[in-house]
Length: 468
Image 1: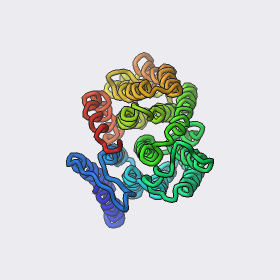
Image 2 (image 1 turned 30 degrees about the horizontal axis):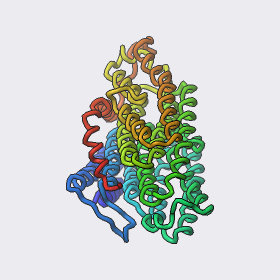
Image 3 (image 1 turned 180 degrees about the horizontal axis):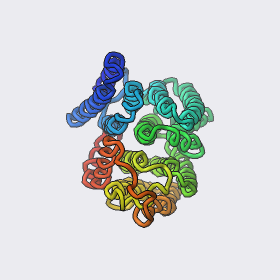
Image 4 (image 1 turned 90 degrees about the vertical axis):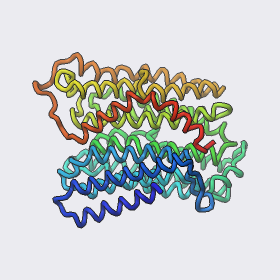
């Protein structure tokens, strides 16, 4: 149902752009906001009703797990539309931009339900191809075209890896359905199966900015419109993590010793690469881009813990971390839209815009993992899952998470120090800016702060998601 609602709203926005005329950009943005909100309501209603079922011969599943991620994706799309509405209306591109946002969300919603590997590939592309256009959308900035081109080239390479890996797995198992793949993937893997698994994981690693496949991330996020960078750093990544979790647990449970070891190594490398490069940045947008690389490493550490009795905790960690990261990172990126990209733009912000400075401080502290903010619960759940795994390699990943959280303190708290201790760069500070962006920033700050109230229900929801 959420997919049908999103498809319908996509068509309505397209037709609205054709027939409403150039003076009705606000109408188109309003239709897009209503469409994403309706998709969110449809997913919430089905989740509340406990709906669960499979379609297309078991290749498509609508269960609690999929609906949980559809909620994250549609909520993120709604706030992105709110934040981008005035900017898109001012440039006269609201129909095109809103269509791209809904298309990415639709691809993500299809992706989290897929139980067929070729369906996974098609859904990945449906979510990714509009993403290229979103990054390159701001044609007035050279960085936007450059970032879009780099994202496109690396994305095509990633898709090639992913498809080749899927084809090899299909060749080994004789089917792309995860149930049939699980029957073919035993504890002892053939060389072809190992190559297919490595290629598929490499393709997904590109998509979630995991090292060493992360190099497109800072240029793409710096060139993209701010709302696009905020959206793409959260929604498609959450969808990729969700479908990867489903593929590994449903399709390759017997091969867990192999893929958990790979995940642990990738997680450790990704955490250190992301944080060490973020330390060198003076541009806040690039700093958050490298930060998103590090956070991908934190979530991948939860994947490494998916073994033995720690599997339920590992699934919970991925689901809770995805929700926690969505609210804090969306808010942090959009604050840049109001203040500026350079670190010195935040100097003395508390003196001129105290509420905005407090909101940004909340996001920075949450990204570090300071309790009781959202990021703390995401990291705590990963540590809890890792400690219960009984694997020395996962213990190393958990230790790396703790070390990297400390490593990230200087660049996150450097922003807080600038806002509260430095003199303002100008007497009046940044302007009031866009009301939709400000509303989204403050809404995300509230959700980040009050996240602890939802941790219990989220954990219960994750336990009964139907994936295990």
